[in-house]
Image 1: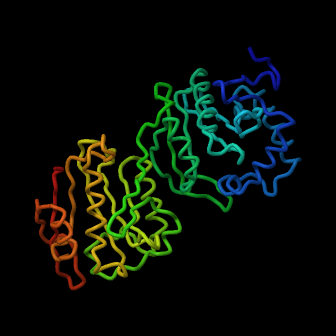
Image 2: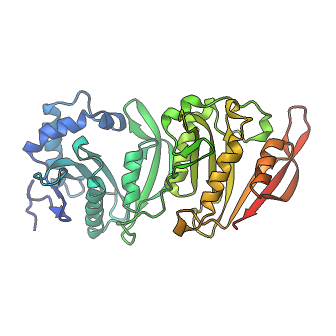
Length: 379
């Protein structure tokens, strides 16, 4: 049993590879390294510059918190980050108790750069969360600034469910940011994600490479040169590119959509995108139906890019799981009735009109345009 004074009061937790233990004096050089790492600086509010005195103050704060019955519970993470090497300080994980025993706890974590990409943090978070449930925590909450994908990936791997994005809720270096918030409970499976994280596999053909989107691809985004009612306001364009990419990656992380960057196979320059998604928030799974959406930038039109790219995607998502596809049962799409080019693409893919809605889209002259609904069953 742990003693009643620091560091003996800190319970040692382990899984055979990763150990959570009390922070020590000999960890402080690594704490300084971690605290000055660009990723830590970007996503936290640790003092800058961070020096040895800051680290010693942090150790003293850590010791006092464990002596407080309702204080924060913080551990140093120790792990073997290089095969065959001795375990070393790898980061920090902490738990903050709720204001009352019946309220949920919350977690925080930061990884030393030398330990990244090894699965160390997800293992550490599982150990801390299990310990909190043994102490009676009803749930453990996680939050991170929108865009902190490394943190979200850790929470996802540990079975956390993301509940919402809260405006101006997370402190960051230059103020506050919108934040993701999620939680996990004592009866959830901490060893597996609660939802799939859909990764767009690379598809090639007709001089195109369909792949995952990168931040650098946004430099190729072009302004629309077609009637406004042909695409919704949320469609990718220069003014909303960053927001669009965040939504796209969020859909992948929630398992509700998968989006391909349509790139020229020779230059790898982005030409547009193709997406398959659910509007109801359900995950994409075998036997489900989903909606198809696509956009080709003006400079890439007139050479069959939309038809070739959508065919690659449709063939993939309707292929059975055992052949590497998504196994979707049915695809739908929605177009403006006067969008002849997009309608021709869908007909060429074997889609048929299953609905005609009247006066759905307002036009600049005050009149209204119709829209068509399309469907295609998997063969």
